[in-house]
Length: 188
Figure (cartoon, rainbow, N blue to C red):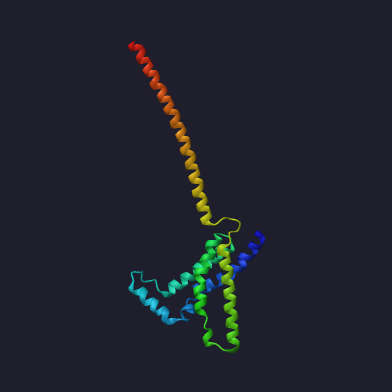
């Protein structure tokens, strides 16, 4: 299975890396799809306390760069679940928003539907990659196991301390009794 993952991860990541780089280099491709929405976001950004250099183009470029970086991380098996989740978040919205099937007819419509299904298949593959444990337990399982181990260690330490306290208590009683005997011998 490791060999399959070694081959499949770069193949699955390649379109995301390509789209991410393309988006980072040419953000207008995304902006031209819904210019009114991007203008509204740009004006909303202008009214906030964000730095002046942050505009829609910068956000779109950064999203493309993040997607390309996540694709590279996934392809090289570095943080694969986190990278796959990042790919899913950064690209699914962009791909869904870019499709204008309602404006197409005939062969163009067929090609666009095929493209949508291909993109959906890629997103399905990334969704599987998000939950692929690669033989390693999930973060939640590891956290609960850590807590369970810590509780067992704490309980063992508590038992050990109680034993030591019991021994010290017996020793203290013995010391008190011997001191009482010496005192009674001295008084008598």
